[in-house]
Image (cartoon, rainbow, N blue to C red):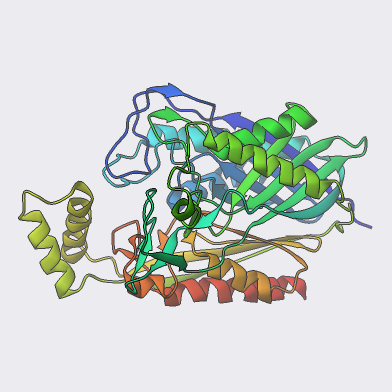
Length: 436
């Protein structure tokens, strides 16, 4: 019988002060550090196949980061280890490898992330020990909410406001509140690592200090319980239409506050739910590791004549908002330098009866449910921003309503809903192939 082994390691990747922090319209420059940023690697090996799941405290990144890291691991470990990367999506983290809403890329930081991630993978690989693996799932519905709402006038709005808005009717869609935990304990009962999957935008901190957001607080709670050596590979789920703002609750209580410490509250809630779920965890994951992936070519949307006319009007007006000006400039760029297609990698991993489906974008909740509902595995995680970022992956009715996430741009949103459903279909096909 096969023996499951696991190793884990982490590295601090907090960049220098003064660099741009992506995530908002226009640059913010780092002036301090609330908490350190990490890359964390968990290697799982059944003696035949090995995978490295790497969680990086960064808003997102283009696929070139993953390609460079995979190449480095191939040099260091050969073809022994298959790598999946995922951005935690913190909006107070490292610069990324493309210009994001006027925040410049910083390639020295990206090269450092690649270097430190490779170090973590190699250390994790070299430190593999026999483990037993368990899966548990909790429900955490206090801290994440659909951020798109039907309004009384028939429109759909994203984040309709913190003040009481009498026109809000209901959220557009249900969201996934699952906290999914895959835990690895050594033969002495010490927790080596966890892979945790939960969907919510980590955009609760703001400001100009580096911070891993609620993920950093969850990390602290786990280390307090299991020691400094335990590693958390946090995988954000299908959070493209999810954040921490309770749009319905704010209609009942317009003074509902989200203070500077709210990210700690979120991390504490997640830790509580996780520990409760683990209290009944069964360590019955079979020692079998499989991987698969497929890349397809996704057709990108192109700006319409109406888009270009709007953009020219915006750029010709002195009263245009900063955000509209950014969108207008990108529409003109897309007209002058068309981008027709983008390659899309879907990657799947199974560890016993637990599956991970990695999708490269900010995925809407519907897609995550679609994969879980059709998966042949009994335990499932769907990972957003896996191996790269292809903007928001929007579904109907939000796409046709023209919500924020659907606005055409170079990086922010460029696929039609058909691509969203194709991602789900490919993931399910890969899961079925692995299950055979």
